[in-house]
Length: 138
Picture (cartoon, rainbow, N blue to C red):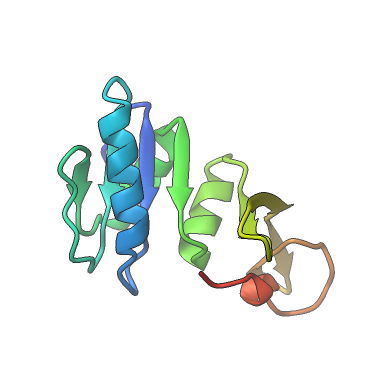
């Protein structure tokens, strides 16, 4: 297994696309909470954190070790992040924004095994598809 993160906050934006808004928000949170270690995997983003430890990309064993070792895992809604979190025993809940612009807790996300293949869902059924594509985009 890879190198464990300190028992603090691990943030992942994924490896496919940048997510500078999340990186910047968590870096600002790290500045406001200096006693809590924060590490951010920033991927292809342009913003480089000034207050949190950061890395562009991690090897899979190191990524999984950080997810398993953190006290709080904050991530985008990518399948790899969700599966890593749930397999590491973390609970994973969606957060959505209402039409009034307020954030609200969404539904818990689960891994459902159908015919030997993993799907991420907010419901347990035997349909061979993920059902998170209907989450709102911001």
